[in-house]
Image (tube, rainbow, N blue to C red; front, side, top):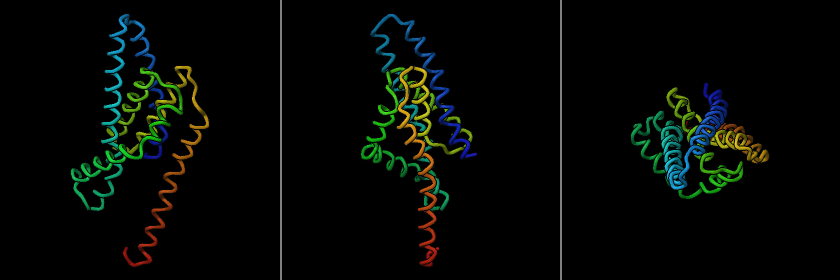
Length: 192
């Protein structure tokens, strides 16, 4: 189920983002006032970013702190606070390269396409959360960005997507190997 959700969530995000892009493009085309359009762009940007950030809390923080709860080191609320603080520190330190890749390297984004990618992705992650499935919000947002890039006719940088997909496969496999090696080292030292 989890592996299927990893594949389905970026695809679903792309589809939802495309639908939202079509709908909001239609809505914007009906508005005559530039100031109203600008206000709507700002409101949508805040709404989309906030919803996606909320999902990072419900999903990524839960993914990261779940083992702490499972091992009995922390209660869920304490683990959530710990995870939220660590998430904030990560966002303020090492997140800029990923922001640049998702925001600029995959495809050109405008206000509506950025909102549609964020909101479509957030809906897909929320659905996975409701089913109790841990998915990657990052994979979902990439799916949303690719979806709107294709629909908006901006095209998608295939080499960037290829590198991202390689990372999606290599990261869990590498984590498995490192975890096994650490566990074996602890076992050899008699700590397990």
